[in-house]
Length: 158
Image (cartoon, rainbow, N blue to C red; front, side, top):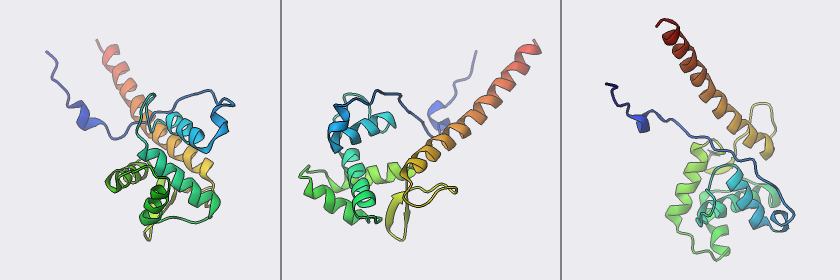
């Protein structure tokens, strides 16, 4: 009989990325583009109504693209409060930490910014997102390759 594996303890991270249509309707507003991006990056699921992660992303894009500066958590909270979304501070802090844990944003001296790959310049958000996701997938596939090699050896030795 097989011994049960504590699966949830083995998961270091999860990587979801969706290939989605980018329609004209999606491109009509900042909010719909941010929601589309969050869906494509696996930060939210379809039909999910959580707004906090969308609010945090919108604040990050505002500070990076409009003001060309790295916001503090207070800046992000202030921006979100102006959206009149009644997003709770605890929820905002949770989503900031989740984006940080996923390698999408970083923090230095109290300021948040999109993670910067070694080969890119600050503010290259496209390279930042791409590097974050690709490096996570590469790490996962190294382990997948090792598992398949081990399985091959086990089946060949039967």
